[in-house]
Image 1: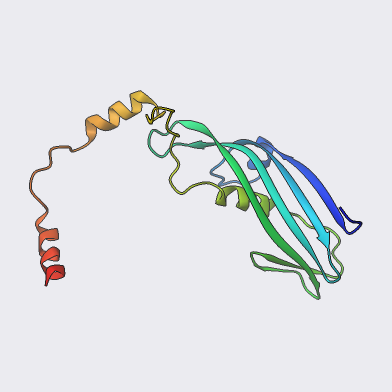
Image 2: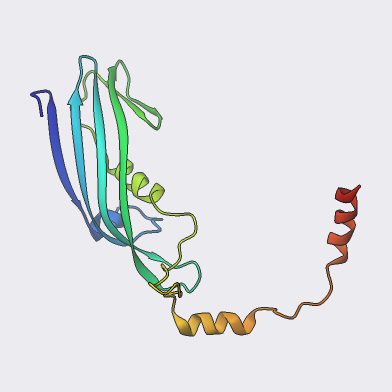
Length: 161
């Protein structure tokens, strides 16, 4: 690293997620590395996050650890007023000398999670979800639906024309 570069390390644990009242994540252990490269009128931040968080499975509702690995960039510029309206650029006022990245860390972690959160498959391609819950779900599925919904039949006629 050159003299205009700095590296900052952070540890994220359960107390980090407790700061967010409506957080969908309550537990996790992650390491954050922020690499700052200072330019003449800006600072380029590269934020690397690595670890795991405990999330709820969408299928069986059981909590399981999910690995998080992401890299994000953030540009810090200096101006007359503080502005964070652009998600990739922060404008700090000339009087400011501190930057709080907590909200950015949280958002990057959330964005690293998949939309559908289910237990991973095992090496044989079988679900690792809670078997008791899957059994209950299967009992309530409507497997023997006969016929079609007449409302959909009318709509299909329109698309076929």
